Structure formats: C-alpha cells, structure tokens
Length: 303
Image (cartoon, rainbow, N blue to C red; front, side, top):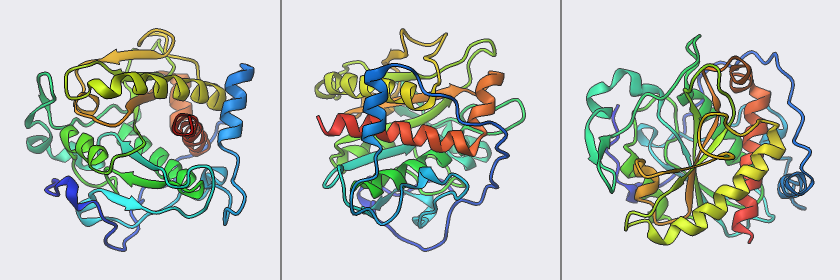
C-alpha cells in the first residue's frame, strides 16, 4: 500500500511485529577494524553501553533481530529511549532507504516530485545483489539494529518507515519527517549498486540549494564523524569509485536538498561486488554496520 500519511502523523501505532524476512545465512566473520588510533577510539568510546542501561545494545546480539511496532501502513514511527546514557534528550532520524513493496508499485514510486532543484521520482526500488538480496531489506535490518542501539543510549529515534513491506515514502516526505521532529541528526541508510570491480562505502553530503543552506556545514561535520566511525568500526574501505576519500557531495537527492536538519546518506557497501556482498548479507556485519553508524551519530550530536 502506498503512503498517504503526512509527516505530522509521526506516532507509534499498531502492535504487529514487522520483520518477517528470514535471517540471512551468516558465513562471514566480522572484519577487523581499521588501525587508525583516533578513529578507533571515537568508535569504541561512542558505542560503550552507558551505565544504567537495562541490557546491552541490540547490535551486540545479531542473532536476534530487533522488532518494532508497525505504524499504520508501515508509516513513520517515533520510539522513546529504552535506556539512559550519552544520548539522553537527543532525537535521531533514521531513514532506511527504499522499501520492500516498491517493486510492485511502479505507478507510485515513479511519480515525479520536486527535490528542491529539479524533478526526480518519488522513490526507487534500490539495488540488489546478483542473487536477489535487496538493498531495501539490508537498509531495514541495519535500521532496526541502529534504532535499538540509539534508544539504549537514551535517544528518541524517529523512523521514516516501520516495515519493509510498504511503499515509499517519497523522498520529499522522508526529508519532511526529520525537519518536523527537529532531529539533532539524520542519516539515510543505503547500499550501492556500483561496478562489480569497485567496493567500499561512501558518505553523500548536501550541496547548498537554498532550503538546506544552513545544514550544509554541520552535515559535512556529521559526514566526517560517520566516515571515521564506519571505517574504524567495520573495516570496510572507503569507496574506490564514488567520491573522494569516502565523501561525495550530491545536489540531486531530495532527501538532503530539502532537509533543514543535519543529514547525510551512507552507502554502506557495493551490492554488486563479491567481497561486499558477503558482508551485506551477513547478520553479523549488518549489526556491526549499525554499531558503527551509531558511533558516528553519537560523536556528532555530542560535539
């Protein structure tokens, strides 16, 4: 079902548990972190479980995928903290890119919207591995681990979608949700469909277009924090084909063109590269990626 909810309806509603996909076979061990001392320190200190937390952050137990209540039509949801710690009082927008139902909803996702600079489609299906493992599912699973980690550290987390069976929302709505809740930071989780010979991760940062002028500079800081934490926490190299040293400015993405809160996209890996495919389909690495993203977000919001 397509989205019809405005951003103002960001509530926790419903009670069904949304993750229905089976756990991927995990045949790969966690890669070794980067040897960068400063980046390693930032990543490990930022993800340390705060005193008083009721349980370890959920990414520490990747065999158990966290679950969340499904909002109406899989729409946006606002989830309060489950613990107390370094992120007390912070609001984080987590945007799992694409959606599992997009493949059967071409008439909805191909609708043109204005992205702040030009027309683009409402959404896309996203990438997938040669074996058919979808980017939408990868994004969703990482978002679930990330949400659990952030809430355990005291943050309120707002998700742009609460299932992987819906359609959209449009990129304009994804930006509006973060703006409306005045998020301290926002991240869109993605995985790329690049050339098979290329691998690595990239941070996509906004370029000034008027609406987003005030968040370009802080978004660059967020991007740098996220790059350092992701490299240190996952061992994944920066992209060999996208951007420079893991950073790629983009002026064609409505999700950052229309944002008024600090926001970046992260392309966690290349779903067409054999080495990266082994990672993105691994539950252990999905949890590792989430923990690293949490470290980068934490470093930024505590500045």
